[in-house]
Image (cartoon, rainbow, N blue to C red):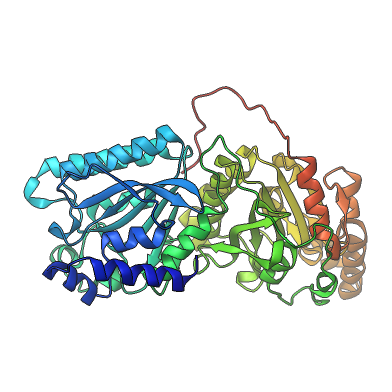
Length: 498
């Protein structure tokens, strides 16, 4: 359905629903009501409300998105500020249990002041009911959080436990302690937006995955996200018919890499040239922009894309990029979405700040995620892949299934100039013509190592492909791997370096 169709539905609902003072206040704040939000989210006339006699500040039920069943809870800020009581926690817990039993996505619409203070510890029990279900559902069914109001205190951890978090500018607020508590404890004066607004969580904290300017667009995009996802961990994502031929080549890719290796280019242009109809839904776009993650389709099949962005920090992998990509890789693996990695990486980010902040620990998350993943894993090195970052980005050494490289790609421990300066430091220093000998050594290093032929001969690449053939080669590889089955050691679970 188009946005105009949804707006018409919204007008009809408002005309047939009497407005009380609290609803008027909600609209005056630029916010929709809990029922209006459900209307925007679901297919027309498909919502079936559960626990209708419940009197607490949440609406629960089921409906359909593009004809597929989903379960929904929508917190109602017009009732006691949407605060979570023991009753509300139990009510949300029931619909989450039902979603898990039926193997269908759960979508939470958050607009709550947090635990209901005057209930004391009983309200915390209600929050605990929700957090327990978030954990049980994790990796079993998709969990989508749409935060369209405050989500405060311990209750803010519920969206954080979900797979994806949608936010809206000037409406979303998430924080563990609000501005008043911050003021009393630290004497710091900060506004709700500065502390935990949508911009903060999209650009700085990384809590949010999507940022939109209106609730209407936000719910449309939540519907779009579901179109890429399966119903549960035992199902496959839906196949969407496309008029984009699988054999289509992208001639523009043959000239997209600059001749100057120090010159950047936009990896988005490669992604949109490869995927069906250029349709790419990027995840956490404003956060850790040196790495790109998102969902697309190849020949109608959902794929997860992970790629370096040479325009930002030269595509190096820092702490935030490691965490962002690792989380996305694990999601795709949990829900049977093949991974396509587009690699142009000079390495992990150097420097005391990164080392002291734990780049080893956080970078290990990315390595763990790729090594653990059992879905089909395809990797294309477009320009360079150096050092540990080469290993981490879906290499054969981490059970990558099919690895390609473009003809000018370089796969090595490090760049030729740096390598020569380290390995032949004494030779260069004692040479009567250090500049000349260094140039010769760099040229020799280039000839032996700075091309993909060396990796191909060792069996670490499956083929060197023409850039314009990347799309058909990836589609063919996915077809080859469609029945992939990989045995893993029997264990309770791994111990990822969190």
